[in-house]
Image (tube, rainbow, N blue to C red):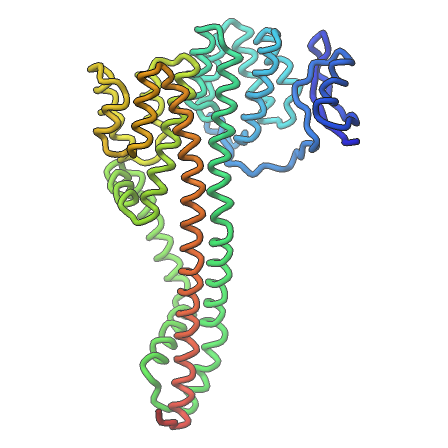
Length: 408
């Protein structure tokens, strides 16, 4: 038997939560329904109120946050409630009672008040632009207009979940290189600030002429020890200048162009953007958003400015009746496979479905490319650190041999 944590409502819509024992998930659902409860969330893992790994989203400039994980959960629960026939007004009221985080409760309370006062759901969400993206709001607006709000909510939740999954894959792949570089960098720093200065005093006392590699090593060690504050300040200014450069439109455009031309990294960045473009377009089109409106929204979420700039060509091509595949081909951003799949989607009237397949295909390509990139980065980092440490060791040995007047 397994213990399942659940959130549910009774026939009157009152929220209920607790634990029950069941052999599997389906049996747990059946037990809840047998008790005349309507299950909203059933999980074999109890919620951890202090756990949040995802990047938080700020609310109206305040320092209060809602994690992307919580946003996905809220959207899924709301979709379940609305799909069961409960009115939006009542569903939001239930979510307010179910919300565990005070930040989420506050936002949901404000949204509920506005909807209860007669505002549309999309307009209520639009009051919190730093929590709910343009994509989220426009999909909800399309769902409200077309009477498919539950379907739109499910689509939004699926989109957010897939996006977070892609980000999580990228983050997890970078953990080992980050640890490796941190440990290696710390080891080298200890050598330059602790070990080498001791040998430096010995060399000074002996007064022997030192080889050039040893002089270089001692100079670097002395610079780090005596001018560490200036080095930190210079590095900080360099980083701040780079951030300022990226915040300028021309600077960001130039940098994104450089990224696309980099070996390995450029291909990975392109695949990530293709996946993001395809999934966003597929999600918006499946929710009933017009293709031109979907394209405008998609352009705002693309990270690479060079690729986002090509969306203007797509917009113009759609206005001229060229469809989506032909202008995409002219941009030179999308590879032949993606163009072919989109062309088939347009010809068969299944553009949204084919865009979703393109997104799934390039999600797998991104994961494969990340693994290949990491497999190349790891030996490169190990070799680099080995060369630095080897240089230090050889410099020390040369100095020792020089002092002892050993001829080679």
